[in-house]
Image (cartoon, rainbow, N blue to C red; front, side, top):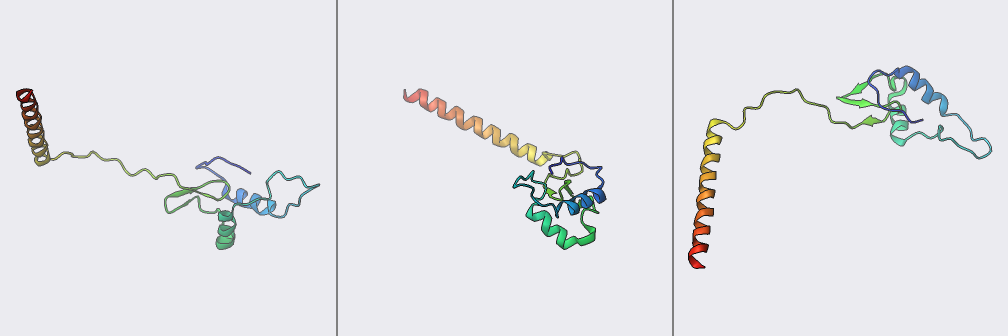
Length: 114
């Protein structure tokens, strides 16, 4: 019972399907894996009871069709960053000038010694 994550899922039918697959028995020792339920899902089924898979989102996280939490990052709202500030820009320019001066003095010293 593998499903892909989808934002428009029918959670009631999925919960019903998960509930009906719990009682399947093996026939002739062959299993297709539908009777297996991940531990996280089983504990959520016990904890939530009748409300299992009735909520499509939990604290910003999405839930896949098996009831597992998709730990995908939730995108924050976008905004324009005002970086660097004018003061930081001056500091960066000063640091760059000092770095160029140090490199130039090092090269001049190397040429003078050789």
